[in-house]
Amino acid sequence: MFTHRIDQPSDRKASLNWLLLGFNGGFINAGGFLVTGRFVTHVTGFATLFGVDSVQHGWDEALGILSVPLFFLGGSFLAGWLIDRRAFRGEAPHYDYVMALCAGALLVAAFATSFTHFVPFGETLRVKEVYLVLAALCLASGLQNAALTSSSGNSVRTTHLTGITTDLGLGLARLLSLGSRDERAARERHANRLRAGTILAFIAGSAVGAWVFFHTRYVGFLIPAFIAATAAWQGRRTKLRLRAALGASPSREDA
Image 1 (tube, helix red, strand yellow):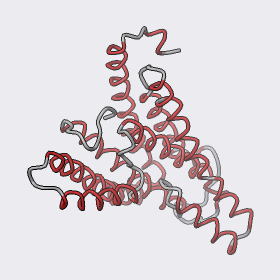
Image 2 (image 1 turned 60 degrees about the horizontal axis):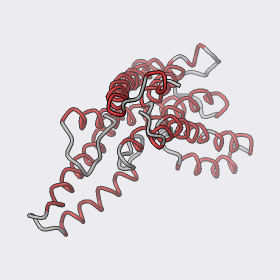
Image 3 (image 1 turned 180 degrees about the horizontal axis):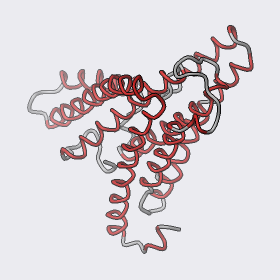
């Protein structure tokens, strides 16, 4: 899951794991929208909502919504600290820690009603009433997105579709420009299949997520939490393999 690049051949398991996290991104986004009335896996919408809320709901609401993307940024920073920083130092990255934190944030969202008071599911648009859920979901999305982005050499985005849709359009143009016998064409076809698959997986996750959340409400976040926990377990296996390859001692790696 954490050791392949989009432009290089990968085994079926790695590709399926990638698509699973694309599904997870769509699932989280659907749940976030149904719970809070806002899309939570990308930052663009929050910038737009800041402008809208500053006019319609006042500066307190606008500033509240503007602060939410900081949790996405914080998740990305944590992932970079635990993954890229260690890779730069020649150490095995902590993919497992990052995805475990992601799972933990999703558990907070699943049980948020135990920590604070909420209006009924799907009926609130006030930031202060759903701030904990917004923060937890943005943190989880930042962690997941950064982990896959880092491990794929900046090729993978699983929590939003703008970048990967752009990549697919460029990839199709490149494919039409290359001759059928050009070795680059085979790599481009492979990359385009994974890009298209990620888009479809995200859409499928959104559809399944909507159905699940309509029936289970906040508890539906247990499903993406489980997927993230599974990714953490696989990240642990990846780290152990890298640790063995690097010849590092356990005490150094866990420092």
